[in-house]
Length: 231
Image (cartoon, rainbow, N blue to C red):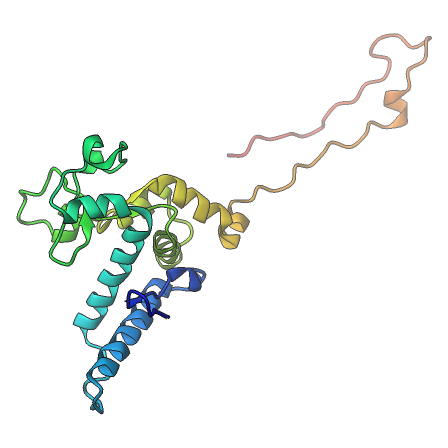
């Protein structure tokens, strides 16, 4: 939908489920189609077939749009300070921001990125040196984690999934979000579910009813074979 007041486009990720493989890519593709249509309608001319097709730049532009939308929803004060050329200090913001330890900065597309200690390493990709900052409660972060959780396999460990996500994103509270996604996944709950424990049967009557005239060890039972410990 488009807000007529500020002319901003909102394709919210909360409308997409993470239960299928590639839903994050689907969200990006749908957003790219909507942005493409808006640009065509703004020109008020009949589009050609080539102009309606999506290219990699359209998908990248849509992904950047989703990042900006998620950051504006959860970090509006930090974005405003960075756009005005200010630092994220308590004096400028009026509160202590959780992003101070990441020393964030805005890139050329207006996306807030964290600075790492490996930014001088020229062999590493740009997204690894400057990951995109997201909040764990944002719908985009949940959609991203859920899609990767399904695509790379349900049985992978938390550290493996966390390593894959941190190649491009810096999600505040990522460990908590991964636990929430894993615990809400039906397939993972089935795989991790423990079986029922077998209760021991009751003793027979001749071994459980003791009379006063019986002396100790008058009646006893013995296991003929076993139990055997099997690794």
